[in-house]
Image (cartoon, rainbow, N blue to C red; front, side, top):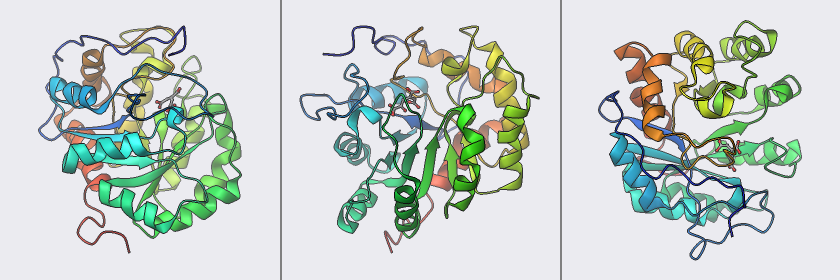
Length: 298
Ligand code: 0GY
């Protein structure tokens, strides 16, 4: 049974007014279950509604998007079967990001690579996961670097300062979820957000997803209070930003966004055709579709 206060994804998102460029990638989305086929992990911190690959691919088509990067959701723990199954079903239109432990075997990594997995996620958000020692993450990072994979990192703004040395020690590209989750009551120029922007400025390995205005907002839709944050990052780092829906929007307890409205938000943070092409096509294609694809794992 899903959590009593769980809000299911929007049943009927609008057709976006903004027409995305040809080949646009939803570079942050998830699949949940379906539980009858892919049970949720016993250690999960929430129990969602089912949200399977067929619904995800239907949303992709409805929004005019072309490709998906499916990020392993914490409700499935380190059991990547639902994500891998979706990647295999989506074929070359789909890539994945896994969650693995130190015990993952080389064969399992190779199998995931074959399915389209191109990275792992290190999660530091305490309400979502039990803590993993940094030494374990370091060991995993060294192994996946050999596959040409990268690392997606999820943390809350308050934890960034402590995490910086660790992030800068990692051997791959790092993609930070949701701009490091800034507190949007503070303003773009606040030292907390500038700490994140400065990190990106000095370290070219650090990319970010300019995602989740619906999570960061204090004002609610249409998320005008988040625009300045995304616009700042897109303008400063046009070659290291990617975008995604975050469908089916885990743990949105305040409201459920209309995914079509999330697409309409894109030109507010990427106002020119060139920035939109970078954000939605060129950057995610470079990161997820061009590395090691011909050769497979080393
Ligand atoms: C997100 C955000 C959240 C959840 C997860 O894997 C997850 O459970 O990522 C969240 O609750 O903030 O990026 O989907």
